[in-house]
Length: 287
Ligand SMILES: Cc1ncc(C[n+]2csc(CCOP(=O)(O)OP(=O)(O)O)c2C)c(N)n1
Ligand code: SF4
Image (cartoon, rainbow, N blue to C red):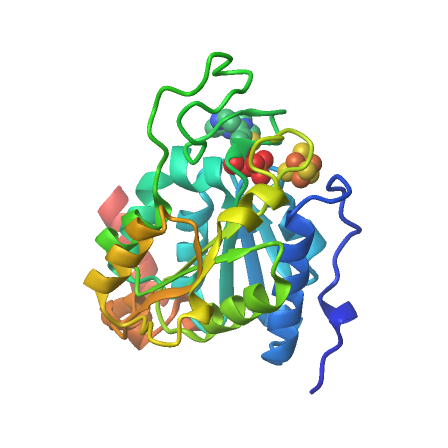
């Protein structure tokens, strides 16, 4: 069946005009349409933040979870029903602050989900505080004299933690971003896509123009092959993290096929009725 973009439309977005998150939503809708994925086979799991609202604006299934708990919920859904395309989505605060531990473990386990991080270098929903990806010296309500800490480097963390697909995109380049999301969904394993998605209301420092001036596009480098981890790390460090394209990709067994339970019988295909003898055994166990 051929789907139309409107098949992937949810409720009308409430983001501020000009917010980078519009482009992420549009690219996700276009990517899933181009892949011919039935909207009812796609689940978006989001955290709390402006970015988290993507779950309502996309027309598939959705789960608006807790701040920082996007990945464990997405993991549970994928293990229970591996046939679904599971997209986790949230902000840099959600994923690299409160949710950082989940991010790291999902990568080493190679959970077969696509993780879109809308990285605007600020906490936006809460009206503008310094986030883990805010640069040193960043001025906000929580750091009025400038952030004293080094920023989190998501790509370096993803390379070290074992993500099997690592890419970075920009809301200002929708063609590339759509292709990255398509590649991420097609990849079997954990796909981490960090997306520079400027907040036009609260972050007047890291604007569309700021990113545009700095971004190095890997698609322009004909010699770059994303299959060498050491080279990938060098590239990321050389570009001070501000590069876009597919940075690294490897094939590795995915978690739900390595675990005996989900591999043999996913939860959604497991009968829930109990035999009388099983019921009695349980009663005895808990008596
Ligand atoms: C457990 C918990 N702690 C704190 C909050 C308050 N809170 C809501 S959104 C948010 C940060 C949002 O920033 P980010 O994740 O970067 O998303 P953005 O709004 O920038 O898209 C915080 C701290 C919360 N909702 N739950
Ligand atoms: S506050 Fe910022 S991140 Fe939130 S909707 Fe507005 S522009 Fe987007």
